[in-house]
Length: 333
Ligand code: PYC
Image 1: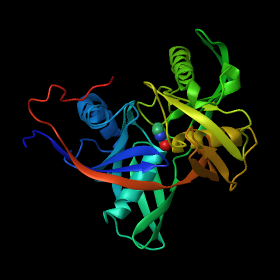
Image 2: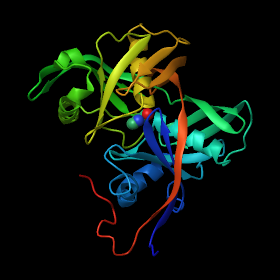
Image 3: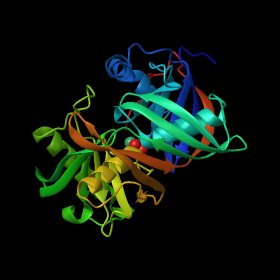
């Protein structure tokens, strides 16, 4: 075999959603913070991301995380999140996958029954508490970055859909939250293409007219996720279809989306601190969320969420690049 690039990975899935955890072959990405590394990677390393997540090594709903040395003394590892949609500031299912892989591979000191791992992410410090039995990661609770509402009960004009009511919140990424009833679609995977089309059109309309901008994190300035809320959802149990740019659904219940949704429910006075909120994905898998304290972000009222879910290791591999490969950066279909 010949290869001009060799990248080592441990593959996992979190409640159905893949996280390819990159453990070697990338080197240290320049930047004094993980967000600086993310911005550097967006500019200079996009072909590494597409090499790892698009076809033929990945697929249209692939996601991963590149391990890095932490840029902070108080964290164990740094993480850069990669997806078909780009380099995310934060990813909940990805963090649960990373924490599980770190435990299962012994890349952190393991304590039973709980191993605490502090992760340096582009959006801030995320603490993962891994329930460990006999060296096995049983479940992970992450304490996410502060989450807050950007706007409530707005309307956006979307070609083909008309005036669509939505709210927008940050939970590590920006999420537009839209009732499926409001776009006349059922919570039914047989209508996935129609739901996805509606989601992409809503994102485009929001980004064209009133894109969000995080007050503290550079380069977080668009909405690439639409959380379509199923009829009958409430502040105890919510079901949703998460449409993500450029055209796929989260298979997991989406940790940052669950955080954004809890911030919205809290802002409406419908979800109190320290109360379980169950969020179910389009494939029926679940995260349990909680809001653990109030805080603020640049003067905006915010909450700190925790998300509990499970991840499983699915494989280990080395991804190679033959010098004659006609698709050195992969491709999207
Ligand atoms: O779990 O936060 C998440 C996530 C973001 C995009 C896909 N999953």
